[in-house]
Length: 399
Ligand code: AMP
Image (tube, rainbow, N blue to C red; front, side, top):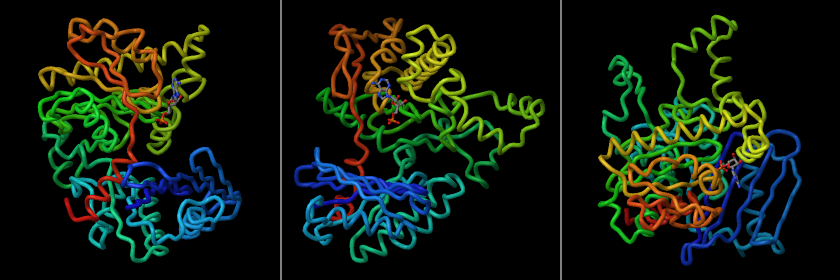
């Protein structure tokens, strides 16, 4: 079966067509600037590139153009859109409603809508993508795969905040966690690489990209994760602050006369690597500047490295040990320097990096020293494949 993966944002739509017989990507693309001037579709098929400049008034038009590109005589990969057996949609917030991926029906759509208040920028955009594809692919079954569902296995001691219980019972304020498809994929791959059953392993997965989160995966299940009700909690990120003392906000807001929306904007968009370094939210820029002696860039990196190290220590304690630490996403897969700095002085925990093996980018590899008790794995993430596999399984009724 051929499965189309759709990740819809408010003005963009990313897609990928996967042939599930061989689990290979046939084509992938991006429609940008939906609803604003300068609309564009870019599609790649291996090395072959196709670009179309065209105004896309809404997501429905974007979906139509995506399908036309996929069946395009010269640039496409399909003879007809009927060859697409199912569509898998990435949805950011499934709240407590979704503990796993779900076939999309009216109840599912309602539940996604209900969870929009937790992810006001993402869920409504995901819904627009679903509704638009449903309009243009009327009889094709569709599945929603949630960033949050893998973390629904967390126990209350991990997901509750130390606030009045009514905030949880009445308002559902709790830690949900994100990047679940990535944490799930790399923890399963890690078990495969180690030739062990995931049930017998304690793994810490570090998804480090523009947004970053860590996850404690015990016996194949998420038992703790660093992001919270929203993706703002946890380690320092590209533009997000990660953890701060909540009382510091009152102090800053009083002194700078900011309201809560302005304050949240600073924490989400002007903090992190960007805010601390004063240079860039992009790790490559910050690492390069730090290497040339830029002090604020060096401080930003130290904050990030130290923050990740603290979570690794905490999750080792929570699980009563660790068998493997996995690095994934843009920074985790590519920054040898970050891996080395984060894991320095951890021999007491049985964590010992092989510095030569560690010089790897974007490839699956065990980079631990031969005598390291804990395996250290670099694993490129593949969220689309997880979405495609879940979609196939649900559509075939095997889940
Ligand atoms: P992602 O959100 O997973 O696409 O990751 C984006 C982040 O990965 C950005 O901060 C990039 O600077 C970072 N990144 C990509 N390639 C490298 C690299 N070779 N070295 C360090 N960071 C990288």
